[in-house]
Structure formats: C-alpha cells, structure tokens
Length: 267
Length: 275
Image (cartoon, rainbow over all chains, first blue to last red):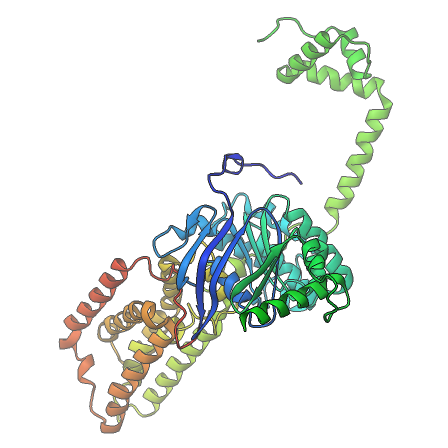
C-alpha cells in the first residue's frame, strides 16, 4: 500500500539534528539519572547501550517529552524542549514504545492502535489505512482482530511497535523492544529497524550488544548518565583492540573494554 | 483541449490489441481523448470484449478471485463500541465507575434500612462520589497506557475534562436516583459534588490527580461524614444556606483551571515522591 506524501514531509528542514542534547540533566526520583549528556543524532538507527541504571530509560522518557529536563538543553526537530514550547506539534512527530508497555486487555490490536492514533490526533479519514499499514509492517496482520490478552509476549511488543509507528514519526523511541522476541522475530525486527531508519531518527535502547551490531548505523554508549562512546558499530568492535575483556563477539568485547577504560579514567 | 473527432474504429482496434506500431503522437492523442470521452471508452470496452480474449479472461479471473476473497468472512468486525467509549472513558476507568455505583447503592441501602436513625448517607457521600473515578483518569497506577497518554499530543486539560465528564455522566444520574429514593434533593448535593470535582482537578496539577482526590476525600470523610454519623446531627455544610459558598468554590476551581489551562500537558518534574 502506498502512502500519500504530504507537503510538510518534503519541506526543507531547518535543523541540523533530529535530537540534540547539550549538557542535558534529567532527574529520576532523587537521583540525577542523566547528568551532563552531550549527544547529537539524525536520521538512522541509533542503538543506545549501557549497563542497568546508566540512565537509558530516563533519557528516552525525556526525549519522549514525558520528563522535564532539570538542566542543559534538549532540542528535538529544531525546537528546544522546555516549559513553553508547543508540545502538541512536536509530539505528533514522535513515536514511543515505553519499557513497561501497558495495554488494554480487552481491546483488539486494531482497536488499540486506532485508539493510539486518535490520541496522536491523526485525521480520522487517514486512521484506518495508517492502522492497517502499521499492523502489516510489524507482521501482525493475521492477528489484527484478536484481543490483546490472547497475544504472546513477542506479539505484544510488535503491537507496541505498531502503535509507535502509526503516525509515521520523525523520531521513533523504542525502549527495550527486543525483550521477549524469539530469534526469528528478532531478525524480522532488525529488518524493520533498517527500513524505518532510512527516513526516521530511530533510537533503540537495548542491552543486547548483538542487536546493535547487526541493525544499527550508530552506537551510543552511556554510563552513569554520561555519554561514553558514540560511533559506528564497527568502531565498537575495533575498540576492543588487543584487549581480551569479557564477551563472546568483537562488539561485546569492545563494549566491556570501553566501559572499563571509562570507569578507570573516572576513578 | 477537446478534439471534435472521435477515435477511428481501426485505430481503436489497434490500440486495444496493444499494437506497438502506433506513432507516439497518435498514441498520446488516443489516450488523452479516452480520458474525457466516455463514449469512446465504451467503444474501447466493446472492442476488448469481442477481440481480445486474453484480457477478458484475465478480467474474469480477477473478478472471480476477488469475489471469493470478499465473500470470505467479515471485513470489519462489528465491535466498534469499545474504542468509541474509550475516547471518553478509558478502560482503566470502568471498574472505578462500577465501584462508585456500588458505594452509592450501599449508602442508599443503609439509608433505607435506618431511615430514622441516621442523617442521609447518600447526601453525605454525594460530594465526594466522583472522586473515586476522577482519581483514575490521570494516574500511572490506574491506567496501563498512561505513559503513552502523557506523551501523546492529545494529553492536556481537554482530555482530562473529557474523562471527568464521562465520570460525571455516570455518577450524577446514579446519585440522582439514589437521592430521590432516599429523599436527598439534588439541590443540596449537586454543587458540593461539582466543587469537589473542580477542586480535585485544580489541585491535581500540583500534587497529582490521584493524590488530590485522595486528600479531598479523606478530608471530607474525617471532617464531615464521620462526625455526622457519630453525633447523628445533620451536616451543617450541606444546609441550603451554604449553597452560595459551594457555588463560589466551583467558580474558584473553574477560574484556576482556565488560568492554568496548559496544565496536564506538560513535562513532568520528577519529584521526590516518585515519577
């Protein structure tokens, strides 16, 4: 199915980066979970890696315009996010799959994605087509009219991705999307990611280094709320060097080597 | 630009058979003519039907396949109501509304059983009855998709008010019926009921809607319901003379909401009491 391209989509961009953070600080509870982060990302698939508690989810929630930055600046699609900006226009261009993806058990997949499309203020004439397209892209077309409570964990994740992409976002935030997917579904998901990354800024938070190495054009590594490394997946593998750190693949060894070196210089 | 001539029959036959020998300019003229001339399209159809068995059989095959697909099963399921209702009252709210109705029914039962002993419980419960539902309309704990709702463009006071209206549409008729049976006139409880709802919404932006509703319900229960039940004296705060003050409170709540109409849109400050 071919989607109509609107004038707004082909208009010239007036910003350099889809997501840009300068000295960003975001609080999670009492802790400063993101603490002085500098980051710039544009179209492509960006894998956000880091140990548990590194501030990945807090960063994603602040880019989803759920949390207010405590300091620094966050600029999305050329608009600085603070108290005053018109968030509605910005939010229409963001897709978000939270880490704890909640859903309505009695809704069918189609009803749920339609409800989300309504929340995203999509024109009602376009909604049914967009919903069907999103469901087909995640490979759930044969279960579209089944209730959510009958779906397996992997299917629920895919329904979550469908609601995130239903509005054709320019910024797509996926927090731990591969949790609960079987190996075959992970391969399909990587193909979908590559496809989405051709015209969208996709940020995928994960702790599976091999997902990042396989599907991402860019790796962002965080530790303790700061940026430790940003570069191509090959750079992550190269960072291992002669270092024989923990890990089964070159990318995993690079991941642990970079983290260890960073922690040694911090200490 | 319309040409006065129609397509000659010989040319039309060659076009229908897909003849590659038609000159480009003639082909262009034929197609441009066909676009606006219905009678020539009809003639083309007739030519294809008689001369071109390949195309006719293809069309017949496609038609047969499509008819088979279309007759198999419903295209659109009939269950449209859940998502229509969800735009006003999300599913997380439904159990709360059922609970509220039960509380009102229980109060009515007690009223009818001990009609001479107690001040009307329906009257006492009425002001805080919507709060049970109001607490659930903007809370992460009670709405599973709350995280998605607050990140969506529609998040904001308008959506909160829409859901509040859904709560009131259920609660006020339930109270009206119970009040009529228990002898509590709507004039005595309607304004307090609206005042508590508006107050919870105004306070909710500061401390969270579920906390605001809990604080107000607790204050009313400990300050008015408990003493009235214990002393068996009718509540002074719900005497007809107090109605202007309740109307004033509704007004204050409405003014606060209008002044802070950007509330609930927002970026949340992560506070010490959690996310």
